[in-house]
Length: 386
Image 1 (cartoon, rainbow, N blue to C red):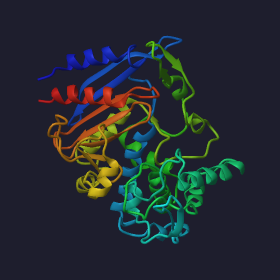
Image 2: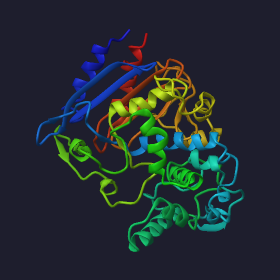
Image 3: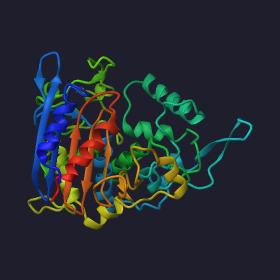
Image 4: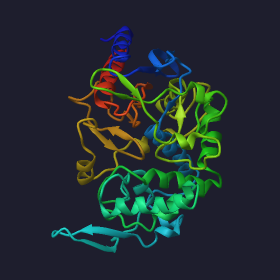
């Protein structure tokens, strides 16, 4: 059996070697079992990583946003099998950019409408627009047109993106991308407030997450970790952090797939609530236990699982905004049904309701070398659970 001194040793091994600094919190049934912080948050000044260090969550935002959306589901605000156009009519006549055997692209009507669950499941056919498909080029064009008019909101983004022909018929494949912006927009539509306001009211304030949000406040900016690029010679180069412009006062975009910042302790409060059936250590219910079970159920078909599969996600399927462990045999020393997600710059959340356990690990580099770091932390941290 591993000991938490082994986790200390591992994080010390990372810090200053593969990452400038890192932090990790392991908790079970409302109690912190381990908390460790190593290395630098700012190499130039020597500012160390501490419990107060703030990290950009990037895609770990998704777990928070999808949980918030499922609170609205519990309140009867929407159904998962409803067409998304019930809430955003712009999506009523979705078109598909179908690539033919000869390489030509045919734009045709979708065979079925986008469903709300397709947005949660990343099955709408709108990836992140970094590639060269017709869909991705059109997504970039839409955002460039929005930006040319000035600042644009999440609602502007989601409504405008409805004109883009998607890569495949909704619900038939899986592609990482725009779906969770659509989920966040659904929160706004059904709650009558911005997603940031909803998260603050329903999650951050009840859970005491005092260092989490979309915009700098108080001393958050001073506590933010610097972003680094690891170099081949073992050094680290500070680089601009993607998306930081949306953290500034006066910004208006609040994303569903990225955009939040937090600390290891704050995110642990959220993760522990989910690990313990939707209830805080003080007994306050945030979300239903059965709703959490629904979120962490695999929703992907065999064909979609092929789209999702890679070595980092081995053993996992995908539920409502979270990966979910289907078969840990030969992969990881945790329970079937463990769930969570990862952020672009090295943040990682693991939530295991069977054991009431959560593990939050954070660093901030691009590239993040996620498999090397996260799978080692996972192995050691779960090896410490009695």
